[in-house]
Image 1 (tube, helix red, strand yellow):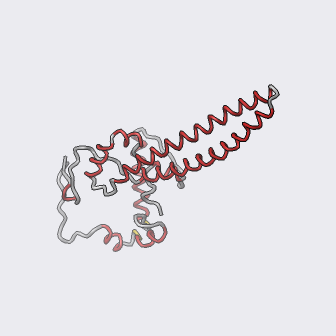
Image 2 (cartoon, helix red, strand yellow; image 1 turned 30 degrees about the vertical axis):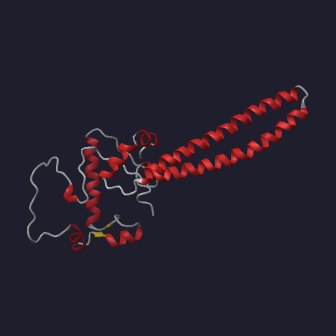
Length: 218
């Protein structure tokens, strides 16, 4: 996720690089900057409220100590007003920060300036190619047909359980998946890496932090 400060300082660059990716909602960039201005203004109002409230609390305490209760009570009325306005400004700030965060999540990462413009995969530039591309024989079939033929993956059931992109492996398919996991784990361990067993569930912050949300939300 791009930082607001980076977007502010590099607006033209951000807009130019996003255009390479054919990002349609360019107006979001200016919306982010405007909303950040509003956030700063609201933050200052809240800070001013809190600063004045703290100063008044000290002044009221000193007035009571010196026997000036009447003057202290007059100032207490102002502290009551500040309590209300600081609450309003604090609530407004939370709403603005949430709106700003939601907009930032909609902005994709920037491509390198060397990336060519294009709208289809055919416009991609091949930078390097290793080895020879194998030639498939005339009777070759795609993997999804093979998995159906040998009954090793159930895409439809996975879609019902979780959603698109989460197949159910079964029979030899499940065994192959487990064997591949063990194979790569063993290779990683032999290379000096440490094996971990992370939780199967994550919280919302982790989902956003890893880029899974909001893209895969729902």
